[in-house]
Length: 266
Image (cartoon, rainbow, N blue to C red; front, side, top):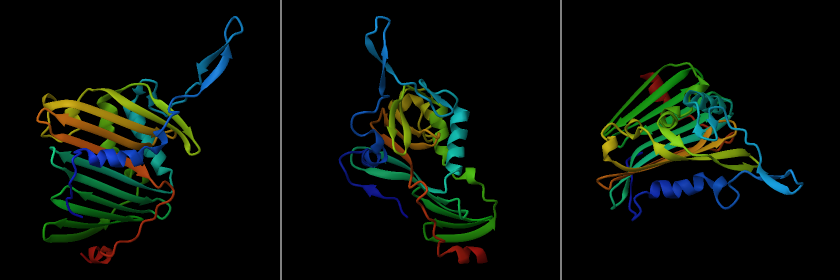
């Protein structure tokens, strides 16, 4: 996997295209709680919002307990049989969008297998977990190295929480849009204020350089963050966009990479 340049006039195409497919539950009308009729004192029917039950760590004002939200996400994913997780960061300046960072994760808890790929544009790191053994492959330019080591398989490790936790800690959200589906209830939270943008972004970006910062979370009723997106514009008109998704829940398999035997020998 190598750094890819997307030639497009829309510098946030990475997020806008992927985001549309990542948040289908909120396409179209009906993204608010269903109203339930009741009677006023004079017997006139009125409409009251159906009571909303929020995932642990969340409420009508967004993330009310960042630690609980993180723990709930980890616990929910550890309870699935399998899933895919992806996190992309794209940077653009009006001439195109470059994938500055890509993180891919395929998990099969049933067979205790996971494949993790991390590409920062300079190097690509592959980590394959099988039961209690970890196999590694690192590609940096023309150099390729292999290794393996004992590593206990811990379900909670494979949650991508490292990319989500800053969005719990450093963002104030408004009330959620709520959508009930055959796959459960989903809550969409949109940012009202980002309290510490520098804590979310790479170290070379400061709060003073940020012109706008928008964040969206889509949370399943079990507390798993099924999608998280942020879009940033700096004072220099640089656009930075990121998208995290959880997909193919209980419908993902992990194939053993063909380089595992080489890593086992090193």
